[in-house]
Image (cartoon, rainbow, N blue to C red):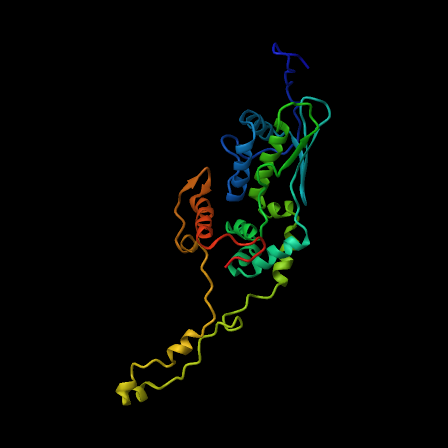
Length: 293
């Protein structure tokens, strides 16, 4: 390998391979859906822009020979300038059975999210479900352990960057890979959601309306003084189960999402954490593992 004027080894040209994994994106950013862009944004905040650029070139040239996603680890082989491909890994914390029980229990209580997951969709709000359980869905800065067998002195190297960009595109194709990386394969999650009982209705939860005597309309007309009286006393109406506090982002959920994005992320996905922080500023943060309202 030739040595440059500054004393550093100059990188040789990578050995071209046939049948490697090739990024679909030919230019610009990689990652199309909100979950893949969230991951890419993390990389672009903490990684060297030059090495990420070379990693995109590797990903688009098909230099990655294989990509395997398992609980807590992504492993791949990348063909560089040497004969033997480099071994690359990216590791995060895989949640244990107790932690996943907390997540699935929280999802059981949210019929809309549960229905979307069972239909193969990834609701943006699932990130908040993990947050409310005290478990981040995406790795925080410093929580992603990466390694490569290459001799490059920079970090992350272009081989790692190529793998991470292809991982983002794999997330686009199958969002359940994000959950599998955290330790819950798709089939196991869907089985747990299907096996859970349906959320209790208002009557089963003790929130049934008070028993009000049904007086025929004709009988009320016969007694004008009692026509406008309530069917139940005010005291009985006050004896109600306390209402559930609405989530801070209720307004965002009720409105139609505007067709506005920032760095490929829908603006509502960016506003939800801000609304949640505003709510916590008023009511105080929830204890990790405590279900959200």
